[in-house]
Image 1 (cartoon, rainbow over the protein chains, first blue to last red):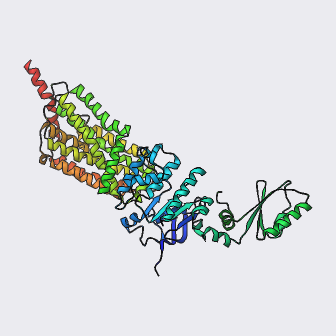
Image 2 (cartoon, chains in turn blue, green):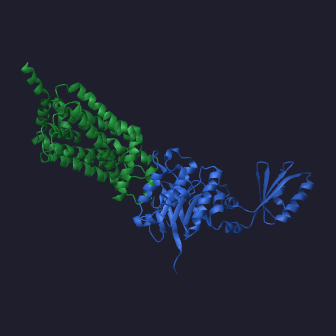
Length: 307
Length: 296
C-alpha cells in the first residue's frame, strides 16, 4: 500500500542536558492536511518541528518528509519544504521585495515576488525596510517567504504568537487559502481557537509526549462528552453540594463562576435549579458549552493550557 | 555558487545602507589618508609611496572587522537560522562575507590612490599587479581572520573584545603605524610572525621598489595559506543558531590559522631580508630630503 503521509515521525526523542524535551513523539500528517501540535510553552512542540525541519538532530527516532530524511537528503529535502520559524528575523535594512527575491533565488522552482506580495497584502510595503514593518506584516512576510519555493510541506511554528486578535484572523484566512492548494501544513500553537479553527487533526503535546491525537471533533467526543455548564449565582455556594448533583463529574470555581462538568446535562440543570430553590439562592446566569480542546487538555493534564 | 553571489549582492546593498560600515570602511580610511599624508608627506611626493602603502595596509586590515563580524549579529538576531532551512550552505554564507567585503574595499583603495596621486603628488603607482595582488589577498586573508573570530565567539560583546586585542597588535607592531625599522629588536622578533607585517612590507615593496608578484611570492603564499586555513576552520565551526555555543577547543583550532605565518616568520628570522627592506623603504622618505638640503 502506498502511504499518503507527507510527514512521518516515529518515536522521536531529544535531550538538552538533564531535560528530556521529547520522550517518544510519533504522528503522521497526510497530504493536504493541516495538522496542529497543541500544547503549552515548553511542551516540546518547537523541538519537534525543528527536528522535522532539519534544524536539530534527534537523539532517537525517525523522521521522513515526502520520504526524505531531513538530515541526509540535503537540497532535495530543502526544495520540498517551506518554513516560518519561531525566533528569527531579517536584517533591519532589507526591503520586503528584496527578501522575497533573495530567498526565491535559492530555488530552481519558485513563485514570483509580485504574486506573493499581492497574495499576502504586502504590495504597498514592498519597498519598506524589514525594521519598519508591524508585527502582523512581518508575520505575513514570513508566510510569504515560506511559500517562495512553492513547497509541498509547510511548517508554521507559532504563526500568530504575539499578534492581536484581528491580525490573527487575517493570518488564519491566509493559512486556509493554502489548504485549497493541497499543501501539507504542520502548525504549532498554544492557542486553542487556532487549533480548533484551522486544523484537520491535532496532536496534544505535553512534557515531550503526544497525549491525545485526532480531529478536534474526535477529541471532544472521545473526552467522554463532558459538557461544561457555567453557572453564576446570587450567593456563593460553599458546601460542595454542587459536585454531588446528578450527572456532575467535576466542579470547579473560576472567579465568580462555577464550572460544572456533566455527562447528563438536562438532568444536571433540573437538579441544579431544585438545589438553588432549597438553598434560597438565585440563578444569575447559566451557560452551556460543548467541550473545547481547552477542557480536553485540562481533563488530560489537570492543568490549563495558558498557565 | 549562485546562492553565494545572490548573498554577496544583497550584503553589499545592506552594507551601503549601513552608516557605521560606510564610516569605518570609507570615511575613516580616507580621513586617515589626509591626516597621515598631510602631516608627513610634505616633501614633494617623495614620501608618498611609503605613506600610501601604510594607508592601504590599514584599509585592507580593516577587513578584519568588516562584514565577517556582521555574521555574529546575524546569528544573535536569529537571521542565520532562517537561511538554514534553505539550500544556502555555511561555506556559501562565509564566502559571501569575503566577497562582499572585498568588493566594498576596492573602491576605497581606488579613491585612496586617486587622492594620493592628485593631492599628494604620488610619483608612480608602483608595480600595479603586485599592489592588486597584495590588496586582494590581504583583504581576503584579514576578512577570513575576522570569520574565525566570529566563529569562536558567542556574543557580539565577546567578539569585539577579542577582535580589538588582535587589532591593536596588528596596528602597532606590524609597521603599519610605527615604521617596522624603528621598532625595538625584541618587538621585531615577534612582528615577523604576524600576517599584518607582511601585508605592510609587501605593499611597501610593491609601491616603492616596484617588486614583482614573483618577488613577493612567499608573502602571498602565506596570505593564501592563512586565508584558506581560516576559512576551512570557520566553516567547520560555523553555527547557525544563537543557542549553540562554540566548543572550548574551538579557540585552539582557530589559532592554527596562523601556522603559515609561523613558518614564514621562522624562515624570515634566519634567512629573511624583511628588516633590510623595511629600513631601505623607510629611508626612501629621508634620502631625497637630505639631497634637497645638500642642494641649498
